[in-house]
Image (cartoon, rainbow, N blue to C red; front, side, top):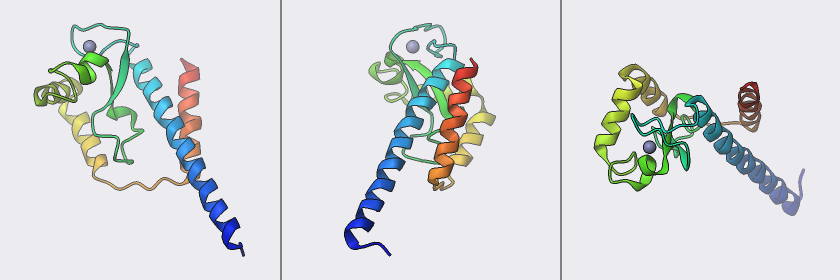
Length: 138
Ligand SMILES: [Zn+2]
């Protein structure tokens, strides 16, 4: 058995590892979403290729869809957050997203976003590897 201090250290280490993997997945997910969009803002007619962000269609607080590649859109910072008409400011933009990605994809992600996903360290690691493979295959 662990002594108190050792146990605490082990818990802390596991937390740090989880946090590291989550940060890593956030970055990789964002890279793939942009890559799949051809590194251009997906908003119709925008065509910006700089200051690109990866937008979570369903918020990233939900771990079931946080690293779901279907749940990502590549948007310039204007269409992501800065403009009045942007993903984080306008309900009308949300409507555009629904139309753009199609009802089926929207419903698929929505359904997944209602589930509760508890990731094990092994699952997080496996996803990191999967994401790295996708990035390198481009
Ligand atoms: Zn844009």
